[in-house]
Length: 206
Image (tube, rainbow, N blue to C red):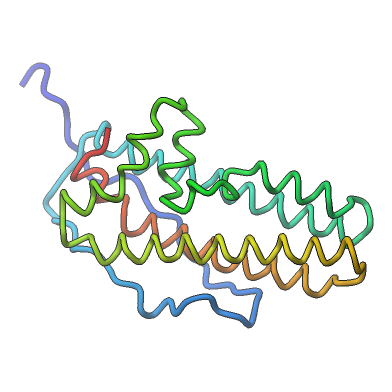
């Protein structure tokens, strides 16, 4: 039919969790993570519907890039090439460090990328998903708890940097904190993509 928007198989794939863990510590039990409703295998989506999932992955890739920056900064601090105060300042400007990120990585980061006037829309994502499909509530609740837990790990890195300023030599504590952040953040981002990409396409969010 002329003018009809084609629907295609779902082409956006979540970033897999490779299972590698650097720390012996665990902030949460991954085995207790809830899953959302199974997607309809016969449902196809327009490219426009799938764009939100692609956007989510793009934002997460930005956070993954920031994580690599954090790891590089910590190695510079440990090597004496960067002072802890400078590292703290740089980390505090990152997307992942903003308080609003705890409300949803997609929300806060998307806001910083497109425009500040989208803030209210972005912060409404999780409540919107709960309303649009109540079956998603356990997943959304878990994602929010994990955001708070990751914030706590970031605070731990900050404390380790402060301690290193006053009592140099806490290399193991710095590395331990960054390894824990790596484990928790990468695991969380993969889980969030796995659970939200399809609902974003199905339910829409503009």
